[in-house]
Image (cartoon, rainbow, N blue to C red; front, side, top):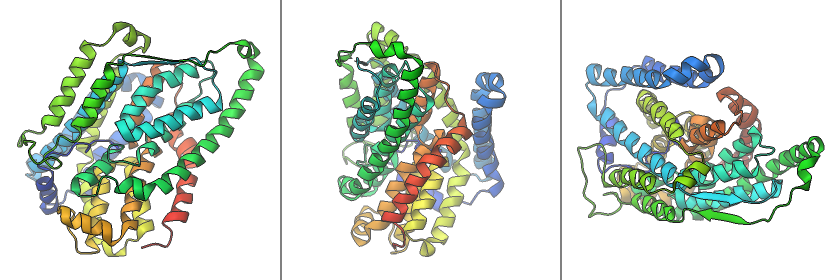
Length: 463
């Protein structure tokens, strides 16, 4: 989100179509207005490395100030309040989803009494990838990250968490509209619910398997080194049992997932609260935050070392990200419409992917979907047109859907749960890589070659 995923449009208000039309007709911002966005990204990347104390104490102020610069520009210079209100609605939807899943999963305790081995960790990843399509990448990440860390506590390394982000927090959720926000946005616009799994599973499976193979060899090597230097750990006895507490919170998770569909665009009788920047869905989710925390077992919260710092960090940083990225998204949408005739499946794949790594993947998905439909003189705001497009040429939608979800793993800001997993891991004492180290050492070195293979096999020379 950035970036991705930001997740976000998991919830688009009934006013989303009107807002999209307002964006289409709005006066374009000056290119210089992307500077606050770039500055915020640079500070997110460099703050924890070079001025950690200042950043930890002032990041909320920095995010809000930079966001206000963009907001005031739109309100006072462009006289465009519609873009601000639409972004506010997206942000509230985003934070409602993340906070409700964060608190509800915090009241669930999972203990796995097993030795940390590559196969045990692969089991975590496979299970997480599957349930990401049922409770979303955020839900799966928040549910599994703590037990995953505890299983590996005697030899936890940054690469364990990085692969968790790759597979569970991002790529896993590529099969259903519930899995990741851009796919849900496509569903709201008219893409059939089961279209994704029918047209992406044969891309999803080999991608996940390839990453699991890479992880296996890295983790196997690390396990050998650990056993060599800490032979006393080899004598530990494990029962293999899985302990699960806080089952009532599964009801809260189910309520959250069901509430995703409580939208006027999905169910006609659901009332819109427009012009309020939130809907009934967001009210339900924020209610779950309060109820699940109030009724949680204190022993479970203590065992999970639960506190609100990770969601607080995400809330402040992304309020700045959402606001400052408005000009970038509008300029990209404008260029995508102009260049739509020159774009093939490969270009859609790389353009959607790259921008989804550094911008919110939901509007990025929508912008390139609009550009692809423009090749057939179809309108993304009309559900009948979207359904016609799905039948017309599926390769463009495949490329856009896969890239929007997969590339969210390229940066911490590519998807909402990435930052939360990073924050929880750091609070558990894990020395997580910084923004640039994550991007260069892991994303570029491991993920990018995998994505190149996906492109060569499925999208090269098509469209």
